[in-house]
Structures are given as structure tokens and as C-alpha cells.
Length: 65
Image 1 (cartoon, rainbow, N blue to C red):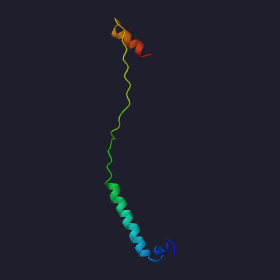
Image 2: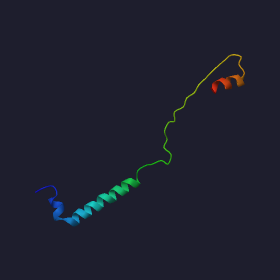
Image 3: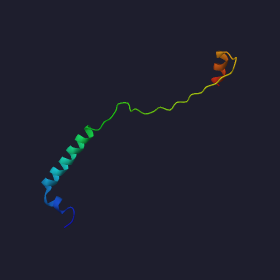
Image 4: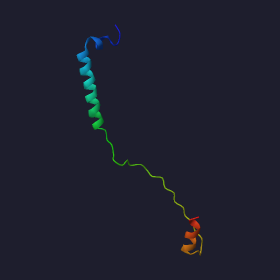
């Protein structure tokens, strides 16, 4: 007697078991917590530059290149 013999002999039970598993899967899928926008840390780079006595326009000109 193989693994599939009870499923072949009882097709209605097999169908009910498949429907029960499908229903349990649908219910479990609906209960999964899913955020519309996941809360993940965004990478950021911060650069500090100092040039004593330099005007803001001078610093901006050299930082954009």
C-alpha cells in the first residue's frame, strides 16, 4: 500500500482535504501583516566641509563639482 492509495480510494475526502487546505491558506494569507510602505532605514551620506574665512558662495561652488 503506497502513500497515494488512500487518496485514490477516497476522492471526496481528498477533495475536502484540498479545499480545507486552500481555505486555511487563504485565511492565513489575509492575516499576514503587510505595510503599504515598509519601514526600512534609508541610507544617507552627510559631508561636512569647512574652509575658514570662505564665503558661502565659494563653498557652494566647490562642493557642486
